[in-house]
Image (cartoon, rainbow over all chains, first blue to last red; front, side, top):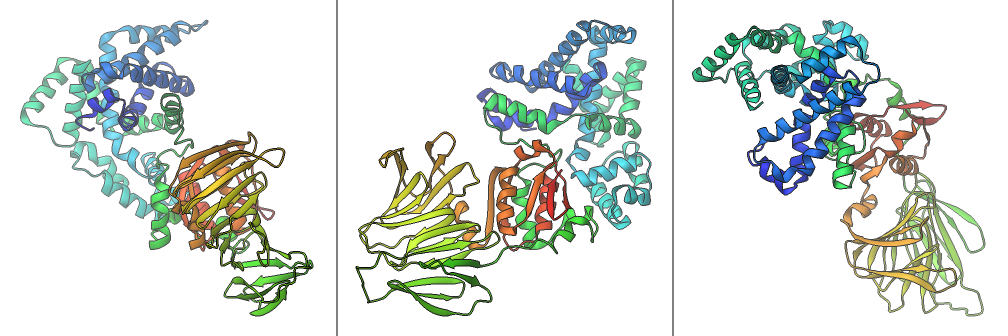
Length: 184
Length: 395
């Protein structure tokens, strides 16, 4: 992310807004989804979080403060959502407990931040390549992917090659093995 | 929570093998501090878990939320459509590349012989053709096959060659005769060039018609347009008026484009060169509003509200249709389909009404096959096209 992003945000630069949105949308959504497994409801919460962030855009002095603000507002919205349900199920009580724990909250933020950074490259692939990678990660063979998507097996191979070359950015073997094993 | 960001950063650095020894030590300490931390670290480096997360991401419609937000926060909805990963303006960049270089990434998605490619055998780009209606009502087919010939009508001789029609005033002036009018009509999938007797050049776009005197003898040169045409008006001291229903464009000598299709909500006059005045005709015969245009300004008349507005535009984008291009500037898919249908002459329908509002920008070659254009639209917006019973269906 741009070094001066916070200054651009303070100034109300629309591009900076978009950059922040693009970077945190999925992480915040996945975070909310853990507590409220209803994607449209979570989308609303995330949307509101971004609106309040933008209203306070002049107050942030560091990108971390902004990130904290976004996660915290989604957390509070999830809590509200869970507490205001007329009929609360048992496991939701456990979720409220988990959400109210600062330790759990921190752990969850680490997880979402890590995953979204690691997956950033895959998310940048074109739809078609991404689709193929997801099917491959799901354990489908090239021929099965070709049949599923109604494309030739050579297309599958080419797309995988392109995807792989884009994804292979000096990942440590531990993180890389699955990608390698999926290639052929 | 700042601590969380720092730890996440360390794990990502570790994954990318960019971690320093000091940071590694810090990470190890954190992992050992709590069994929960070890578990979290293991999860993050488990590709299966990464896949699960990617699937969760797929449940959320990022483009939709972003469009809502931009609409709410900035008041303009630049990105309204739901392409999930490809940026909307990719079309603008990608399309010329595809057309020019044939680097057809998208073809990988679609095998030959598929329904979209098959459409090309039914629907083809338009060509230079038109029908000329003489003052006596006789209609003459113009275009590819028609042989060059000269005919006379009223006070002018008319020559048709090289896909252009030209008028020359004859010496014979007979004031006892009423002024003779001709009409040039381009069909859907057609287009034609016209040189009027005063030296004014007119390029007619598809599905348009222009009514004009074969020889101008009044103190005002007046023509009537329906559809779209680009004018290069000659200077001869007499005002030249293009009337398009309730809006007139009055000029002295200048180049401009008028788009006044009956099935579009607005009439637009875009000035390239010179100066024009756009006049709104009120209920009587008087002028109810007017606007003076400078080059690169555009006047729009909204039919429903009868409102006239003016804005600065890049005029070249509005006249490129003459140079064999078709441009869309963040247009609704509804308008995109309408314009494509005029040039490619096809019928279409929307199965999914929501798709009408998807936005699209591109600069296309008018010779491009329809299937390539539809594939491009499929790639950049969240729509699919099918060809059923001689019509293109937007799904």
